[in-house]
Image 1 (cartoon, chains in turn yellow, red, cyan):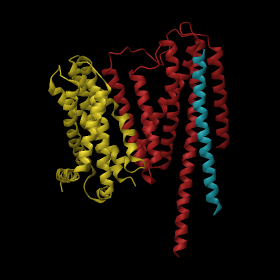
Image 2: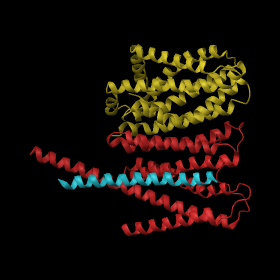
Image 3: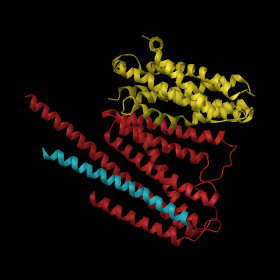
Image 4: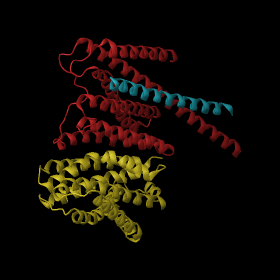
Length: 224
Length: 232
Length: 39
């Protein structure tokens, strides 16, 4: 079976499993909602201030929600001993990695679609800069979190205290991406400074870490 | 080997003592910063050793993924741990120096932030090693180290380019030009002393790890033989 | 200057703590080797 074919099949399987285990999705969405609410009433801001800060807040909230989601998806794999099946299958590890990453990407995108309108409402946000830049930032940022999260998820499920280890190793690695995401978002919202550089940086980050992840996923999968 | 080690250890101890004397007594007091400036003689050498250890770990991780030799992995663990130790010293002494001199404990400039991130990454690395089960340990850790070091580069660049609205005082390194030769002397002695000390620690930690590897191997062999004996 | 002594003190505190950790590590190793040779 071709790489693309395997990708499609694995992705379809993952999405179907997500859809079936609706309580996982529902609890995730509710968790994301709670995160937004808590962040929102922790800071009482004027419209001007909220434009400055919202970028950072949204991404931090999304980071936490994404980690919970990532832990979920890998935990499910482990429960069904899917990881062992992956290892013995002749399917190239790269396509499995991509399939899982895309699946997680879609999952986190759903979270984004839920959380962003809420933030806009709670903070009375109105963007000064073009909205498409915000969309681009959220797509690139999502991928940045998810590509590393998927890779490290594969690493951390093989350890004890796996739920704690994933954020522990994901957060430091995500810092440059976070800086870029927040930079791009804040620049767009406030209209000050150009979002161009952070977006390009984020793009480069995405490409580099996707390639490294693809390159090393086989190694990590086969490790003992 | 034992005596070579003992000689090197004593030499290092002597250097460190001499360095301490140089730093606190022999070097003249700096005009603008006063006695606090002497922290420089400790802060920078520790930073330098850290800057040696982490790239070495990066190299060792790559080499390990290629040839899978346990000795290489032992070296990787050693450099990671020792690197974290020296990095901790840097992160603690830096703010202690900065507060009286520049009035702030911390700033998010490129250098400080990437040092902090490296520290976080390598703590993560050490936790990963602690928490991994069985033989997957070295491979997972090595993969993570590669991500981590790449990331540190990105962090440095990101702050350089995105955080320019904050004031950027220059911390660490960069001794003023026209430096008093006695200060340079104190500085170089401590550089050498801490480099030797770092090498000594890596040597010790490497030996500890390598020996542990061999003991584990022997254990495994023994239980294997017991198994076979029992099976008969 | 108390900052100066704090800095030097902390440096050595960290290094000494690590040396203690290493010593403990060697102690455990020695015990493991004794276990091994016992049987």
